[in-house]
Image (cartoon, rainbow, N blue to C red):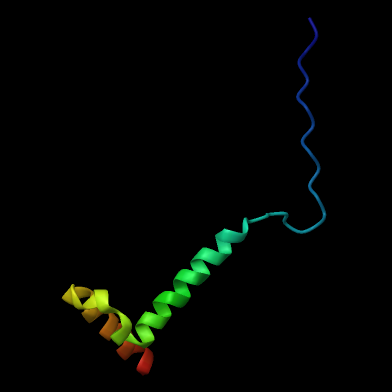
Length: 68
């Protein structure tokens, strides 16, 4: 009975890493960051923050940290 042979592993490529991300994998986090940064820099536009005092305090604290 012949012995089973294991397939040889694929040789490592010498080029860089070939990872392709969809366009939205970078666009959506970037958009979210820009929107949140705009709210932090100008919390008077954050009308929803007035409904929850915890969010308002968080935004005020973030603004204080950025102002240092």
